[in-house]
Image 1 (cartoon, rainbow, N blue to C red):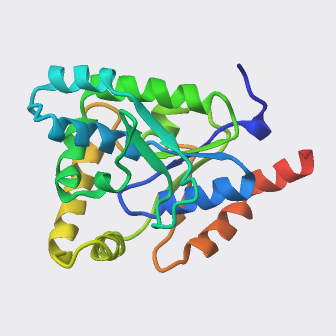
Image 2 (image 1 turned 45 degrees about the vertical axis):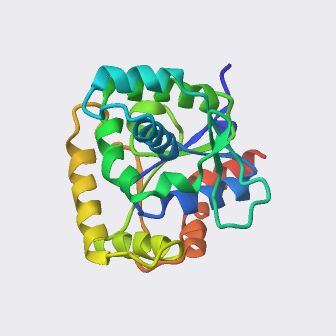
Image 3 (image 1 turned 60 degrees about the vertical axis):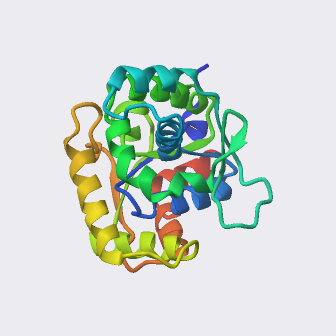
Length: 236
């Protein structure tokens, strides 16, 4: 079903820990839209691969597993543990398990597989086509929703992104090495930007938003001040 431009999905892309998920959720809340973080879908598949001891280098096996998974992304549902959403993998809540270090290390390889991306992109489009949704990921504006009327590309310095991920993990464990997190983010940037299928790219018509040294609230204000939202308010 075709949606009007004022109800169409909004596409947000950016590298790891750039702040795109936090800002995307705040934007969705402000607009009364659904929030869909596609990155958690790739993390869920990676978690399933690891837990079922599927060879992560066996692309065919990973793709087959992906197609078999019952995967649901839901609102936080009143949870007070800081989550932005709830992820159910085969009806089990795995939201925080997705941030395990082992998942961080392997998610880029899993998400590089064409068959995995094809299956998850299909699921993402089914949700986005319903309209009134903020979709966050790494290939939303270029692959998943190339016709989205608003595309944002959220960035931050690599040091700032590593610091954010370090603080996030520090809340759950004492054994956190900032330098290792920094190396992992640099490594993931390289893999995401150079993978063969749907690499991380800024869409030509995307608006760049730099979140370095900015609060999520100030970034949201910057986004809502864009001409796109002024025109939406006028039409409504």
